[in-house]
Image (cartoon, rainbow, N blue to C red; front, side, top):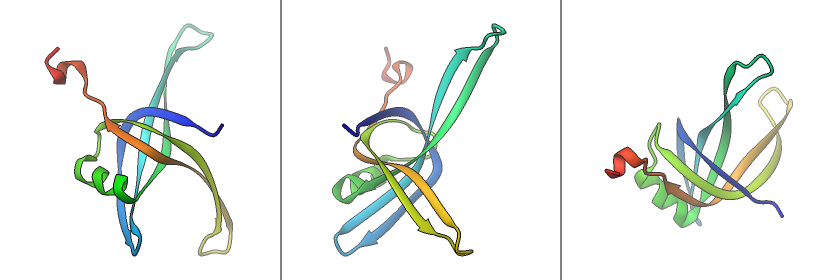
Length: 111
């Protein structure tokens, strides 16, 4: 099963493209991984993911996604390959999302 769920913060790249069949929205998502290494030091690692959203969900996301907003996404991994302007092969792994929700932090919710 090709399924992924991520919770992270929206990066600064929110791009919307319109097609005859609807919209496509792309953005970067930063997820953090905290752990203690073998030297007992705390390490924080940020991983960036490219997210693609289509049609009605893209239209809804366009109304609430902003840089820095924490969101939860569910979708599948998509692997793309294309030639760039210098005729080099570029490989990309993207998350094609079928669910995107804003995450409300406890202090924002008044809890």
